[in-house]
Length: 263
Image (cartoon, rainbow, N blue to C red; front, side):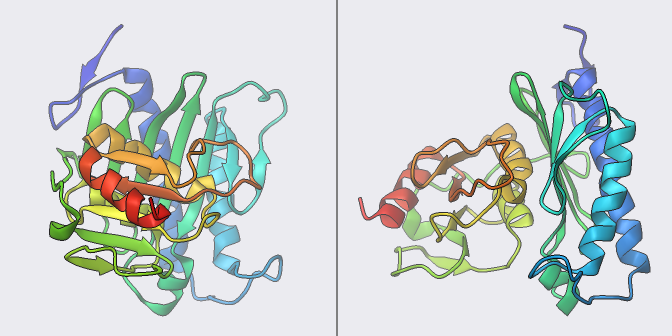
């Protein structure tokens, strides 16, 4: 295989590097939409959807269609250009954390994941509040702003700071927890060692667009992920819902899962 190094010294397949550039371009187009946006009103299409969510989706679709991809988007389902039925698919959450963005909470971004015939291949998350750009590639490591990242290495729940989505049923025994309101940047925080784990407290709380890009980044960085009920995380079904759990280490993941499942 022909390979090429990135700035951080990671060695990657140039085809995946090109795909990452395309996904980053789509996220940059969303940033332009957000910079110009003055309307945080509802879309009128479905509950909980903002008008700007549809604008962000439209610019993502434009970039991804131009690159020949199909798309599975939170906002528009599974779509593609004529003749693209067998093309690789990009899972997209154009604006993860829309409510945070609407209220000025600086924790929101775009999440995109390329899935090729071998499975999840490239994950990109751009935190539009901070400008941080995370990229992870299958077999190639993960970066934040061009610098290699690793999880914290914490193994004990009692030493860990854990992010959550939803309300835990009891105190899990962690050192501290955080509920920040956007799963894609939540999971990249684990990938880069800012927090030590993250847990969905709902059995069917998240669509694949919420977590798949950041899970690719996390695993490429050396972290681990699971699904609370043992289901496949990468599911190309707009109606499917999952309960992801991620951690810096297998030991910590096992502890979180024991608390989450009551095992």
